[in-house]
Image (cartoon, rainbow, N blue to C red; front, side, top):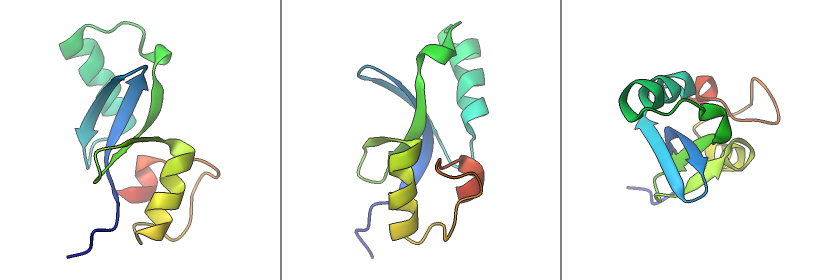
Amino acid sequence: MSSQEKIVSVAFRRNDLVISLPQPNRHGDVIKHMVQNLNYEHTHDFEQGFTTSSRRYVNRIEGVEIAIRSGQITKLNWPPNLFSEDLW
């Protein structure tokens, strides 16, 4: 089994708080979860990104390198940012 870091979930971050949902969820699913279940009204205050198999949060640009290096993608559909649609 490879120990190569991979993108495993979509996530939102504000300061030290990270809210994520596993694949095949999209960022829109996280917004819905935050509004309906966590009572967040202002999700635009959060940065969108991903979490990795190393349990790190990465932004959309940092995620590109990880996804390419791990073989999850070969090219981006909307450079320079990684989107969940690129992955699953």
